[in-house]
Every structure is written in C-alpha cells, then in structure tokens.
Image (cartoon, rainbow over all chains, first blue to last red; front, side, top):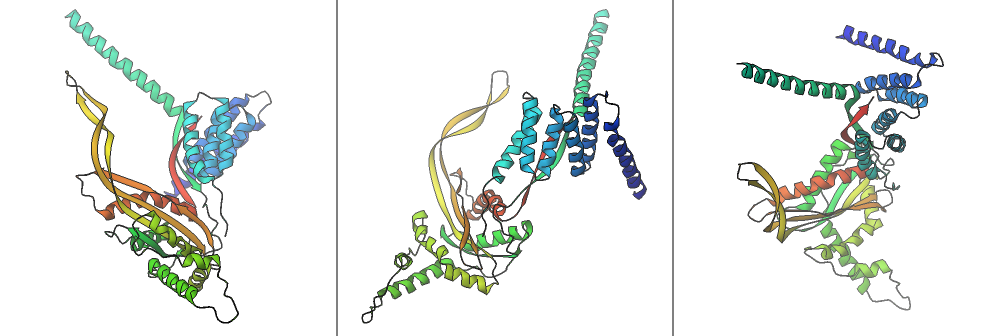
Length: 126
Length: 281
C-alpha cells in the first residue's frame, strides 16, 4: 500500500516535472497544446484533491492561452472550492464570454451564483 | 430464408449502430468532461472571532402549546452549534424570557408610579415609558410578540447575563409557532392513462382543505461583553398538509426548523456547501 502510494507520488512528480518543462519548448510550439497539457494535469491533480496545484496549472494554462474557455471554467471551479469567490466569479464570467453557448460552463456558473449570492451579504462586526 | 437472414442482419446492424453511437458519446464524454465534487466554503455573515463561547439563552415563545418552542429551539440550536461551529456551547437551563420580560415590565411600571418627592422632578426616559406598556400574558400572534422586543434592547440585563457566563456571544430572540389552515385550489400532478394504456402525468387544479403550521423565528445576537445587539435574523416558514393528515406539531416544527437552521448557522460559522461541478479539457 505504502509502496503503491510512493510509486504514484513519484509518477506524479515526474509528470509534474514534464509538464513544468513544457513552457520551455521552442517558441513555435503550439500554445493551445501547451495550455491543454496544463489543463489535463490540473484535472488529474484536482481529482486527487490537490486543488492548489490545480489552480497553479490552470493559471498557467490561461496565461499561455487567454482564449481557452475550458481552462477558465476549471479555474473558476478551483477558486470556488478554495473559497475565493470573487476570483471564481471573474473566471467563470471570462469562460462564458469566450464560449457563450457552452451549457456546461453556464451550468457550473449558475450553481456557483446560487452559492455566491448567499455569501455576498454584508458582514456585521460587534 | 433469405428474408429471415436479412431481418437478422438488419437487427444486428441496428444494434451495432446504436452501440457505436453510445460508445462514441461515452468516449466523448469520458475524455472531455470530468464531474468533480466541490465543497464551497461560505464565510460567516457575522464576525464572531471575538468570542470563544456561545450561550443560546432562551426565546420568547408563542403560538401553539403542543410544543415547548423555547425548550426545543434552545436544544436544537445548541446541538447544531456543537457540531457545525467552532464556538464552544455553554450548557445552562433555558431562560424563561416571557417571565423575565413580565418581571421587568412590572418593575418599570412600579417605578413609574412612584410619587415625585419634594421639588425634584423625576425624569423618565423613553425606554421607561415603553416598558410601562402592558405585555400580553399569552402570545398568540406576531402582534402579541412585538412588545417583547424591548427585552432585547435591555443592555443592562444582557450585560449581566454576559458577566454570569464570562462574556460569551448570546443568542436569543423570539419564536412563534402557530397552526395554520387554508383552503382553495391547489395544483397537483395526477396520473392519466390514455386509450392505449400509456401513462401521463398532468397538472390538475383541485380544491383542498389544508392545515399545518407557521414558524416565525427571530434570532437576536448579543455581545455578552456590552449587552448590545450585534445583529438579528428573521425568517418565516410555513408547511401545509392535506386536512386528513394528522401530522404531529413537533414533527412539523422540526421540518420547518430544518429549512431555517442553515441560515442561522451561516450567520455564525463558515459553512461548506457540497456540490458537483464539471471540469472541461
């Protein structure tokens, strides 16, 4: 069990190193494919519960390709999970602006809005 | 024979086609969409960082006598706070706030009726004057509850309670739990079978006699150090059943409180809302 965990951790680190090295590829490399690699890696780690690492990957992805709606959608979800609601809202809105007809993004955003509306009431201080 | 073979082949081809479409759809979904569970933390509406402890003191309760609303509300809120907030919950007997308000009112009335001695004129504040207004002995509706609100503004009283329990956050307020009846047209979904025996569900408007309960709590949050009100939260929920149903009052009370408790907890502590989202590649 322990060995298995160590192995999967090692493979994750190797994969991380490989993905991290991606931006260093030649200038002519396809930025969308680089961004996609980051998004895929982000999904992989998010599914393991490593949301901060996922945020790091998806932030990189949108930096590489600022027109990548899926990356903004994923970033919105991660920010939401981390309680960074304002950042989540911006990310979702950017994703919708890029792909207004994407029902999945819209559905995620609607669910987020429902929660966000409850959270953004003014705080009373004693 | 040929016809039979051809029918068989056609059926196989159709099944294969459908399977291929499903497989393609699943493959497409499997590679592009990832459903993940998320827990969104919602920060507390009230900043209670100054308090380590909370005292759910008691409530001015009114309405039906089938449920001891004061006792039940205190018990429910304490148990919820114990499991879903970081504040330590103080265990103490619930205060009978109706009695406290009545006593305060009596004292204020007696105070006001004292004759002025000599040349000195006793000045009475606006609070004293309102305190002298009679409080209804039996609380039946919202109007009866209103005069009790001044109890929550009595900072001296709440400061004393705060001192007694080492300055906690105090949760108090009023709870009105009353029976309700209603009659009229309601939309219900009914099953309809057509001539071919196919089932359909159609909305139908029917006249119904219904009865149930209305719960109207008002939670008041008081700073135990000063006795001042920090915030308050009012909610109103109602549940109606078919008049033939004999639903116990206590079960209706819990059904209605179930709808209100998340808001109450959200005022005092960070709540995590569970859900799912779809990650995209």
